[in-house]
Image (cartoon, rainbow, N blue to C red; front, side, top):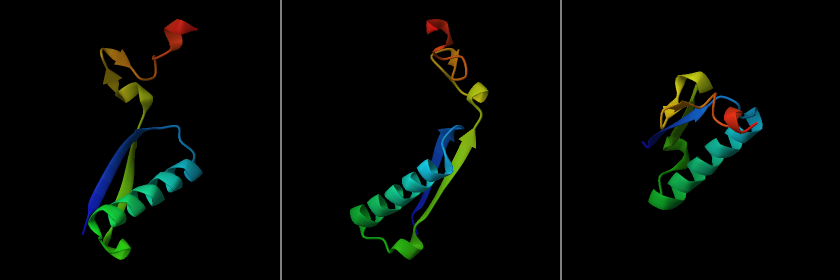
Amino acid sequence: MPLIEIHLAEGRTKDQKEKLLRAVTTAVHDAIDAPVSSIRVWIQEFPKDEYMAAGELLSERGKQQR
């Protein structure tokens, strides 16, 4: 049973997340021929002020350019 966990910053719409979940399910099925009924995919969302890359919070990214 394939288990796929996706980590995303908050801010996507329900439709975007559903589209992603469906695409990943299809990709796993196509890649390893796993039965769709056995594939589990879920999204873990996190606030943009709880993620940092290169010393910059995601919530602050781009603010300096404005």
